[in-house]
Amino acid sequence: MAEKTRRTRTGRDPLERTMEAALRPGRFIRYGESFAFVQGLERIARSIDGLVAEAPARAADLFETFLAGCYQKSEEIDDSSGGFGELMQQLCCRWVRARQAAGSSAGETVGTLLRWRERDGEPKVITKIPDHLQKRPSPSRAPPPQHPFPSRPS
Image: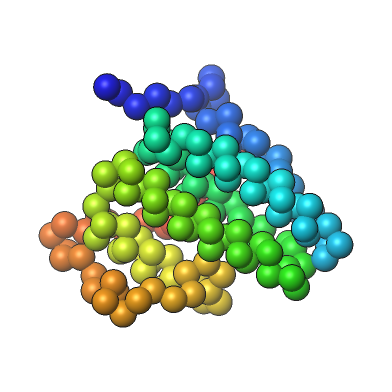
């Protein structure tokens, strides 16, 4: 049975528009606003969680998009409380679980995590990967490297 996808005429998943609106690109989130801001993002993450059983590949794609948006937002928030950073780590775990549910290769997932960590000069999401997982998948089976945080269309 084909996995259900939700795309509009613009080709974007409706949850992507919801994420973008909630992330408020270009607007700095002050310390006093950060708790409510993170709570709103957590509601979106729970909505995506609800898709994992029925559409795991869609959920994994949405979590990856959400992580990319949060990564960009990390420069526009006073996260002195650490709530936003914690949310990003939870999103990463949720992304892994969605990929597992979609039947994605563990080696490919770990390879992606390692590439993200290598590209992130100051780790925001991937702070620790256990040593036994840091062995790269064999080059013959590894997908070509891609930027983990694709720019969104204007």
